[in-house]
Image (cartoon, rainbow, N blue to C red; front, side, top):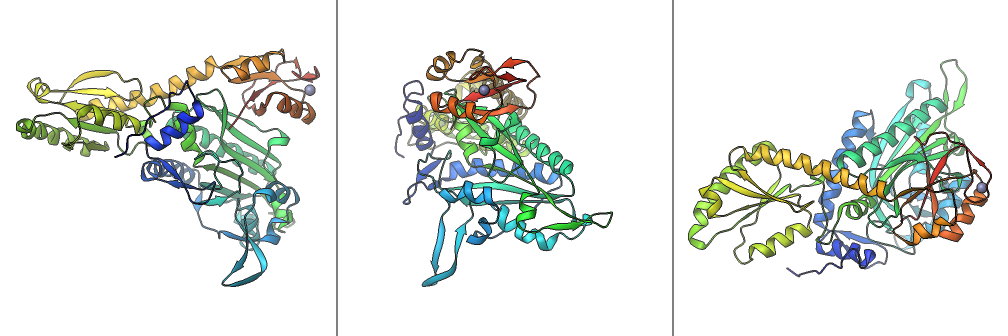
Length: 477
Ligand SMILES: [Zn+2]
């Protein structure tokens, strides 16, 4: 196994990030620039994310379906804003089966068009609504500047596409799914997020309005972690999807769409990772505990007997574990390796521990070590995993609070942004021109207009015009 050295996070954040991915064996570069190979350790995290989200989608009444990868080019052109937004990054198939195609095929950058073309046949009456569908798939957006997990030409995601009878029903769904994303980010990923509405400039191409959850990464930059769009009747009009109302009239259908992708693995790394590697929150870990038995050859049998006994309890309690009894590696090497991969908890056990009927528990998050009895160890471990999950979240909240500023003087923007970074809560008049100028001058964008930002009279940070509430400015991934 190759040793991968990890650059210190404080030295070079961006190198640290790619080093952690290599050291934890999460992903590799692909032969085609911008594409990514997700290795088993990375894919295991994605599978856990999928399970958690899929459960929540089904709890809220959604069903999974699958729509084709190829979309006739003409479909994309039917919604004017949509095509304008996506055209620059679309990959197109012009030849197949040895000849030129009559109509080029777009490789889906997102599936609104092909799905709404299909909904025309599925929706006739108000009785067919709401229609609540989700799809797990890959999409392609030809990006010029790519980074593993955060921005790749092809990525994995889920996209929900729902149809409703009224604007209000669609709004309720848009907000409900934003809430599902928030719960997922906070409860499973231990990543605190801020729910809010995107500005018109930053909304999804083809949406009436977009909501996002925004998280703060370890370098003070923001990461958009999930989006939920109210599409109003835009796609229904483009694809002529109407329904008969309960009063017998015909109306266009209202739509939402919402997506969350493998970039969340990048968010996980950048929220919790440290100089020793990734830290996987227990709820997304496949291996919760690694057991490293320590023994001389003649002690092997007695130590392994104890290990077999308490791991049998782990099995019953649903604790994922690995026993690393490879004799060709020293314990220190093993500790290091499992820390890189982010396993939340390590158990060390040797002959001296057997005498005392105990083991040593080492937490990955704060590297604290404590002794614990072998009796009822499964319950001790479950309790410890719960503590780790909570403390990761609390630590991330503290970090965010420490790097959050209320600023009323624009001169302070570069000070903060070129320093430790963070979220700047400032007033904004609502003008796209002010937003654009701030972006040009500071590279900070309005991340969102927080849903729970209290009403407060103020002056726009850029032009001094009237403002009713603060928005969040930050540099972003
Ligand atoms: Zn302004």
